[in-house]
Image (cartoon, rainbow, N blue to C red; front, top):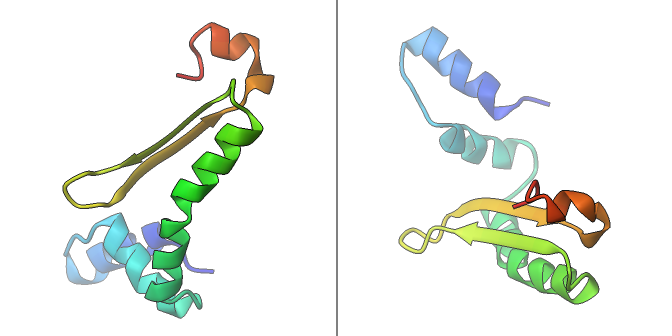
Length: 93
């Protein structure tokens, strides 16, 4: 399966042009069988995933970061309470 970073590298090598990783990823979606509608639905479900994790592990740390201006996904971070001492030392935050 072709990876986005391979697309970025190939475009740069063949055409001496730069494209972002995000653009390469979007190009690969249809090629790898993922439609834009499927990606949108998966994105919409991230909030639900965070709530399910928080209900299952209220002591753990979960963060979903979405850019408020563009509504683009930034990061998803999960440090379960099972990490125990790591969480207390601040490693997971």
